[in-house]
Image (cartoon, rainbow, N blue to C red; front, top):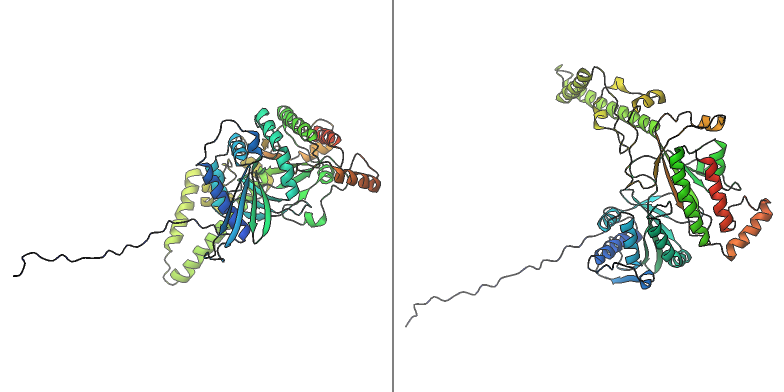
Length: 464
């Protein structure tokens, strides 16, 4: 007897596995790929760790490390085997916090895009990289410098706390070891002394020494050479900060130099970057003129190709023409852009007609007159100081150097290369250089106390 119930058919559901999406860090070299991956990993790890209120002595010797062996990974994109080690993660987290740098911002700056390679101004052979937003510098260091960092990190942290970050010393934000194909590379991350937005037009590396302290011909051939002490003095250059800013600068330098001398550190420099607002304005105007010329050529080409026979004006040409006419009619004459607060020309510059182009410095100065000085954000451009003050009477060299000082100028000042210990090797170098140059006190390799005092005396004379 047939049953009245219908048989249920069994359907098998085919479930497709959904794999978690992983962020891939692509760079031109495996070192940077692993570095970017490691920064993302180490900062993300801190989100799952209880951050203590006070740092313990063990925190200054701690580290985290991870080893990856993924043979199935595409080697063209990423190494299949690598290791990443973060030194003293809680200490550097605390330093970043005191310097006003949020971990998420730090991670984003270093991992959003590949850091760019920059020229190394020194003789150490160290490689330098710059984060995509130009806020952070990554420097390769030696294993000896890593050991020295561990020796001074406790005192460095204490000095930053006690000075409330009122210092020109490097802002150390992280120290790492990256191992790719068995090769170990040590990396130190610091805040960039120069601005992320304002162009640097002149650069000096100053130690207060005169022996062998001139830029080489090869260095001078670069687009932005790093000049040294003798170049600085020979051209009559001075730093015009004004009385109040000079007091603040010298107080910081004195404290920093004493701190470094107590740790027997020497051979450091004051890196000076100068942003010339008049030159920046001229460059912006020139760039605007070139953009307008390209735009005009493009419109002319369209008119010739498409509308010459009919005699009609192309829509693009009408749009450009109406924009230019409106700008001229509303203002009577085209106005120059004045907004240099972040180092870029106001968008209106691209819409102003050609007759407004000013190519000489006098008219560029007028465009920057009044209150239109470059504005810097001290939270980002920590090392920036606005030019102030006048050259003293009777100082012809200073007066010549300040002949264009009516135009705004921004200095970026920070101490660099502090990881040189005055040990047996430097003592031997001091003896050898003294015999060679017959100048015991003028050479760069001297006792840390003498080095600090000479450093301070130099800037007492050069800062006005």
